[in-house]
Structure formats: structure tokens, C-alpha cells
Length: 81
Image 1 (cartoon, helix red, strand yellow):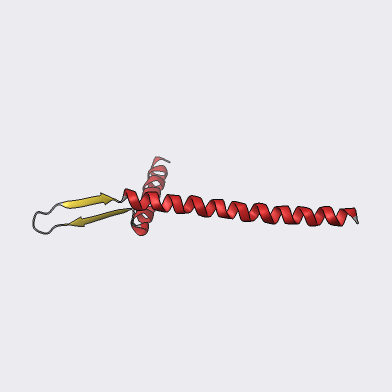
Image 2 (tube, rainbow, N blue to C red):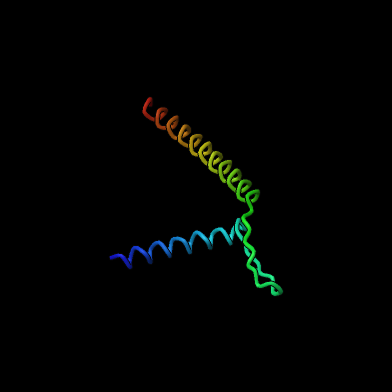
């Protein structure tokens, strides 16, 4: 039981890390001279992507609301007939 939970947590962290790397929010590099590993978190990119995602969701919400309003109007109109 415990091993399953630990593996699930490790899997989740691997997916999150992969997403961060893919989206360019997180990166790392190494210098061969000193053997250090440099980690970076691109807060600007993360904030820009979050703002864009928020705008996209709001746009989808508006479009869904408009379609629902049109569908309701059609139903109301068909009921009146």
C-alpha cells in the first residue's frame, strides 16, 4: 500500500516537472568546468501563460454563455408556437 502511494507521488511529480520543462517555466543547465547544476524558474513566462490561460477560459465561458442564450431563445420560441 505504501509503495503504491509513493510511486503515485513520484509519478505525479514527474508529470508536473515534465509539464514545467515543456512549457519553458523551469529549466536547468550545467557547466562542465565547475560541475554545478544551474536551475531556473521563469516567473515571467509562468505569469504570462497564466494570464493567457485565464483570458482563454474567459473567452470560452463567454462563447458558451452566448450559445446557451441562443439555445434558450430557440426553445422559448418553439414553446410559444
